[in-house]
Length: 128
Length: 120
Image (tube, rainbow over all chains, first blue to last red; front, side):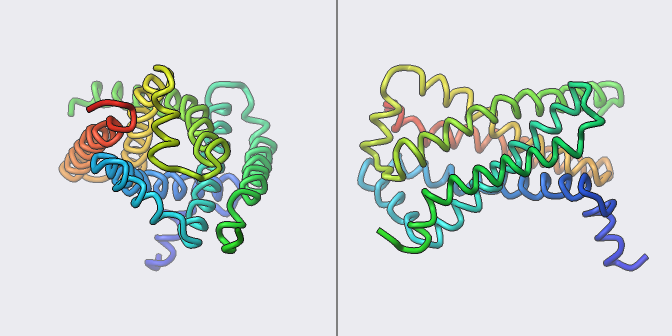
């Protein structure tokens, strides 16, 4: 098998909705785990006192950071709702409802993103 | 690692991943709501400390939230690493790096939060 084929099979064992959600759960999980480090570094500026902390927060208010935060909220929402779906499948007798639960997780993620866009889009677009 | 003990640890990690996941579903919703909706992104030292020092509830919340999120993240990465079946020697190094990194991140996180919570 080619290197590309091996990589594709490793990342996406089957071309199905379940397999895609498994991959998306992993990717959002890795992204969120990595995000913890800069997030903690940012909070750590509190050790420098109020002025240093406020400067650190002010640096994160530009459109690029707002767009990144919006994507982060989307990643949290998908990981959260898909995680609840996984827990439901693990502990409740709902294996037959996997597809419905996946659609519910995606709908809940879309709802969070739609609501969050009201808060984030003005900042991303540089509107007052 | 002795196989039986390793399997037992994996079962505990599997269970704790779900327990922390359930808790984080609540804790992250509270965190995002407090930061982006209540504070309307007007985050400053003054607004954050006013919230966090308003009673002991936020101290208790962060005492649970920080270890839960660090454990969940580290255990998730550990589970992904194990899925690819690393050799025992590599597995030990990955484990050492991940759990050592998680412990360091936990201490670092608490240390950074203390001034906001009113600690010296």
